[in-house]
Length: 229
Image (cartoon, rainbow, N blue to C red; front, top):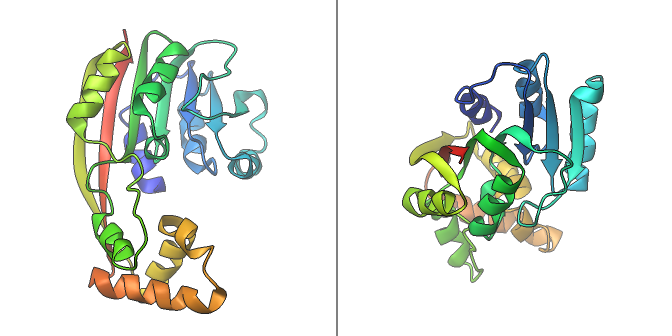
């Protein structure tokens, strides 16, 4: 995820003195790379998770006034005092069910001409995991994995111009079965594993991995670049 985030960050054109919203800062590791690009600017690190913001504040300790932490839901109007010069986001938008509201809320806090550069899970993301989960009688929500065309339409409707959206496959291989099981249990299938009795968790994960047929996850990324009209 950090490697993908660094690659997406390269698409964001900056002079170094901007105010940038990191929409879904998570642990702050990619936020640190963003701050390196802003020697005279600052970052608003936003996340819906208080726990993530606490971890981010630890990882970004020493940045002082260069970073401001905001707990907020991207699906709701954002509580920012001032408008920002750019919005950057990785691995976050697919957690927001209503993308019409998402883009409207972002547009509302962006200056005219401000850049939006983002990447998240796209249509087809982790489909093989979904099939394995459904085979065990569980619902697979697929989160908000959107396609490029519908996303471009939503961005235009929210007031964005110069829109580019595209999907790319990022199959991710794990070095061994234990590493894949750990990642599934703590990230991809965390909400499925947590309610299970401890004695059933190993069997559930083993069954999913068996169904996958290989030590690989079929990630698909939705890429976005646009500017506020």
